[in-house]
Amino acid sequence: MFLLVTLGVYAVGLVLTAVGSRLAGRCATWCCALCGLPMWVVSGTVASLSVALPQLVLAFLASGLSITSMAVGVALAGAVTDLGLVLALCLLRRSVTVDRGEFCRKCGILLAACLVLELFAGDGVLTHTGAGLLMALFVLFVLESILYQYRLAYDEDLQPIGVGPRRLPRSAAVPAMQTMAFPAMSLTNSMKNLAGMLFGAALLTVGAWALLYSATVFANLTGTIQALWAATLISFGFSLPLLAEVLHHPFGSVWKKFAVRCRVHPPAALPMQMLNSAILSLTFVLPVCSLTYRQHLPVGAQFRRYDMPACLALGLILLLPALLKKRLYRWQGALCFAIYLIYVAAVLLAPLAGA
Image 1: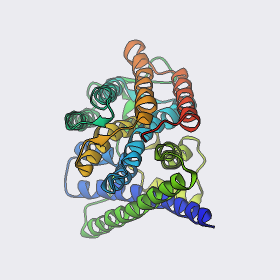
Image 2 (image 1 turned 45 degrees about the vertical axis):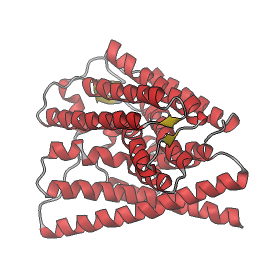
Image 3 (image 1 turned 30 degrees about the horizontal axis):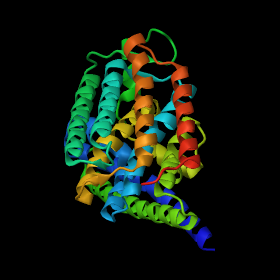
């Protein structure tokens, strides 16, 4: 009976985090736009940051409660899931189009974050120097996102590449990456979106707590490490709404209407948003956890042996064809998905201590 109750708490947590993160992200984006900020600034900051809200809130709660294995696991496993599952299926099932310069630069930031983790967390703890360098990469990520959105708004220096035709028109990347339209400026819209942002944040916090509680209970009941549940139950649960969008199988008419209404970026921008989410998990979520924990953040053997090498391999697979061949290929998606399956199998069948 207790196990069924815990499963119910997990299901409720998934629903609340999915609804709350999208509502809070969309309304926060609207509020910034209604305050008069340029569209390209809003797109490069708030809209970009909203993709990693579930991982951020859950990891923040976990680190504040000193459940460091869950906090680190959510960040690292979330990055692996974003790249190895969602982005991989995007490459396999869609004619993806991205801007080559932006894609390569973001892959470079991802690989730099992996290198920082290897250098400053290889001995089992993330030092304050490592957390500071990750935060510096986060600042670089935000500046790069703002600069790209500015070039996108004025159609400057775009070089679209993708899975599909070898040569794409210069404007092909523009519709795929533009931020969705915002409502008209009015007091009613401002109050409604402010209330929606606060309500979404409350739902997200409650949902993240429910997921953290259920995952911790499952770990205690089964006698397994918490990192296993962060890599499977939580990370896969966070990816379910994204997978529904990639596979064109919405959860239902109610969810479909809500997801469309609260969408910040159009569906064609999903591959780039998954790359952004993975970068934010490494460069923003982990440093925030380190600050919340107020000590050197423990990084167990599970994460050093499985998650960090997986992120590094996925980043290289995504970067090299775009950098050298100026194209994306479906085999990249297949290879990334294979690495994800190997990663999940290793986590499930050969868990390591210290997580």
